[in-house]
Image 1: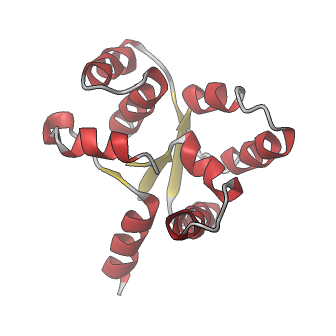
Image 2 (image 1 turned 135 degrees about the horizontal axis):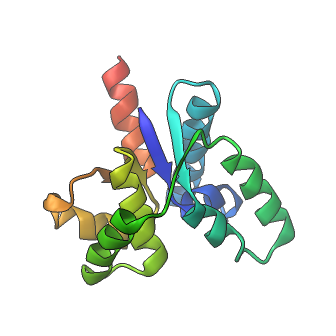
Length: 148
């Protein structure tokens, strides 16, 4: 299986875990990264992830997130197809980085994982987008259910 995590996912382990949803998402993201580390899944990335991480101000967080992205096994290059698809996602109401992440995931035939409900809602309302998007908790529960 191929997964593309947005930067919100990579940063989630450093968020306040006192909220139940965040705590569940932390566990799910770490489990997904472990699946990728063990070679059971393929982690997809892009220069968009690198660029977005460069904006993280907190040194410890930036360093830890940079360590996570070392697990990325395949980088999607930004080309005219990505830009064209990102423009479509922007027209649906996404911010530029989110639109680029979605375009990269779609081109890579990867499931796009995000903790951002806004992105999930936009893609859910537009099934013609041609790719799968999910919250890491929901996705991991589905994948684990399929394994049993």
